[in-house]
Image (cartoon, rainbow, N blue to C red; front, side, top):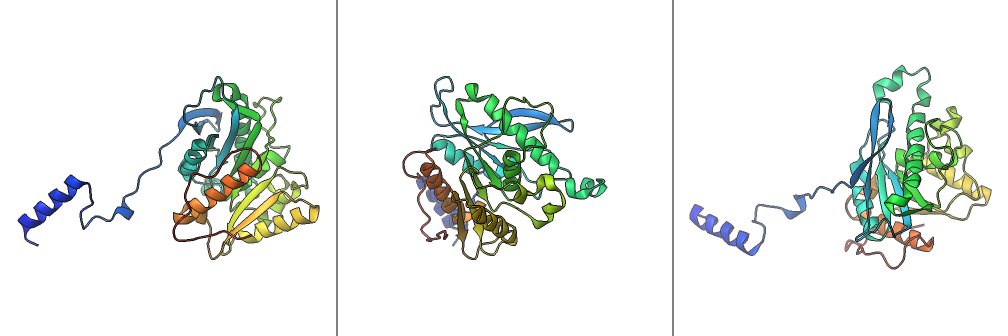
Length: 298
């Protein structure tokens, strides 16, 4: 195409709002919008942030809706709040007050310097407990019901959310002692439950699983190396007589599949339906299933 003709074509495309031929829409990424930022505590000399998303037209002085708090993954040494911004925005649109919180982490270099490197996950759990307590404490001004709090997370964040609610220890002495960290449901995205955690009883999920724990849904890719740890935990739950933990699998998917492409939509829809079953949401999911047809299996 001659330069003049190309210029005219591009101009016409811009007028009618269509992308130019050499621009691929699928590569144009819209950044997730951060929620309203709060500092829920200071640990290791640093303020710890929580981003909160509110339902449309939410009146915190009148509303008393369930709250959901999710913790990002990153191997207990990294990660960011961006991981669950899409999920939080979606569940806020469905009527929940949703939060995603950061937490103290030892860097990989710091882990090597610890007297016992196997204990590096403890600080993550302590801050997660503080985040849940802060969320409950601020219930009146956030417009949430402190008796209907849901938690969860991805990978290391799933592990942290479990121990923050099931392990009675690892509390920050500065936290309000009259506020517990109990929850009414868990939403776990490939939670990283590791056999290595047996070397530190404080962070070993297997020691705290029980028959009567809050209902949970857990998503895993069948090719995820972390699934072996989950399989052990799930088998123990079944052996204990637990019937309220729902496992849903993505055939052929690997770790962190839940935050990519169509699987993100699939898992959010499934989590939505799970929360409806628990009486924490109402109605049908507002996300449309992907046209590519991905489905979770039991």
